[in-house]
Length: 207
Ligand code: SF4
Ligand code: SF4
Ligand code: SF4
Image (tube, rainbow, N blue to C red; front, side, top):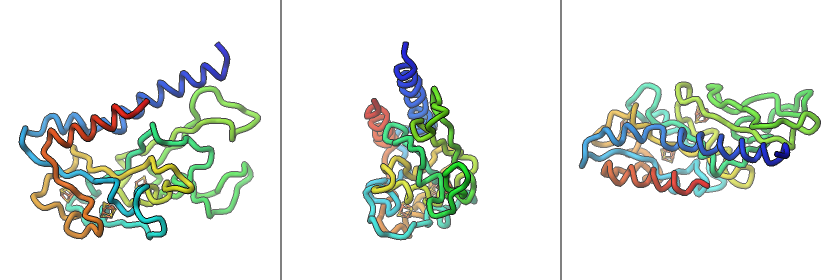
């Protein structure tokens, strides 16, 4: 098997596993929630920070500051199926910082150092830009500030990072405190079954 084919295979299996881990991460908690119960979800198509939000808008941090849980129940999630696995990811690096000796931005964007960058499969030692990189969000550290989501937007990013209510942390407020201030009405309440099918649709859409 050629190095290129083997790298593609590794990439494919890593991506599949990571997609299930990232998108399906709290699906188990949804299953456990009582039938007929409603849960809150972030509609990424409405969120200011997400791909389809306004292009020139400032980052919105209300998901961090308004949640009743100390370290917000909203966290960033990278949908690996849509991630470009870029050499220089604008959500990982502060692309406005000085360039270091390796030709990379010297600072990271995330204020909580919650994103990990790892090369995938075979690594080309002569041309780092020829390699694929996986950007993994550590949800223990993330507080959903939205900076990386905002930075991943087109034209620099592909919009693969979104904000998501994590159902193992959310305390299911009757009226989500974020929803009362969200400028785009992006916090939506769905019955558990519907929330699960939205999550399953995202999983099925992956290659
Ligand atoms: S409050 Fe609304 S617009 Fe702001 S980050 Fe949260 S979901 Fe996005
Ligand atoms: S949402 Fe904020 S804290 Fe979370 S990974 Fe992105 S930049 Fe870091
Ligand atoms: S329902 Fe409550 S705990 Fe859950 S995201 Fe909204 S404010 Fe946070």
